[in-house]
Length: 158
Image (cartoon, rainbow, N blue to C red; front, side, top):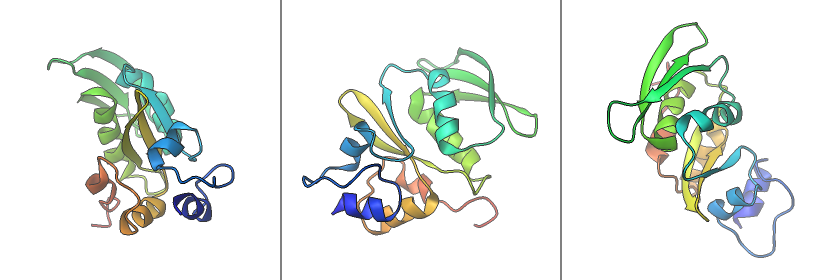
């Protein structure tokens, strides 16, 4: 049972229910450590702080937000832990997750973010340790939109 496995991995809050639930439903119910339910109309700049907190990405700061050059894009100026500023043009929260996961590869102690999908008009995101995500992929209970990127090794380990 999925919930029993998640409990064994230390990422489930509360006791497993008798009725099986999917990752999407567990995330939406607030049962996953590192799980976030994000309204579909949330902008990348609004999701930035909750995501970097859940991913445990150290030293990032959002310094400017503008409308992107491409339709529907947002330009974010992000100060990295070393003080440099990167300019990101992202499409929605999933684009932000992609860029943050790239930075996450440089900080092996950080938790990558899995995009689980949509449930009840919310985007379900799960920031979990790499070993948990790898176990989910190997055991075939993790079906994330960005699974291939999640399984990429941390920088320096390729």
